[in-house]
Image 1: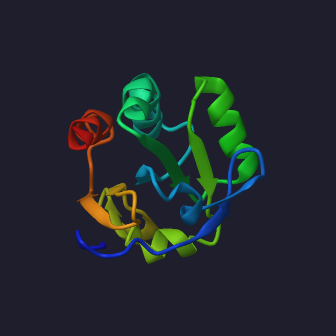
Image 2: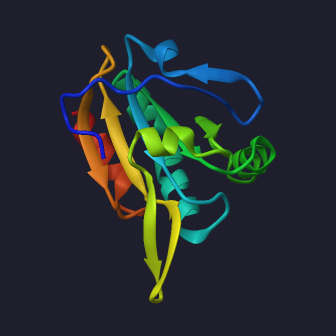
Length: 151
């Protein structure tokens, strides 16, 4: 996981519409960058809907939300439309960005070990520096925690 105070690694990924987004595009704004395992699963849906519900307040505080998973652009589009998500979802099928941000690694599920996405959230300031880093976050609590971190 990245340490608070480090420069956030730059990246470029396609969103749910196939448009490319770079972290550099958001200079001058705070960015809530969250990594989640899979579209349309219970925890990930709870987390995404929590961010959607708080999005107007997040924007009022000068921030944007970027969700990243290894799901495809098409999967992200379906997820966005199904839950009316007002923010950008980025597709990282080769998990390069997930790895750069320490959100890809060993997971244990019912005693079975596999590689996958570790639910991780960062708050990045206007200059591109990590000002909050949260690993193994609880999906339902994370949006409120991040809104509070913006205050």
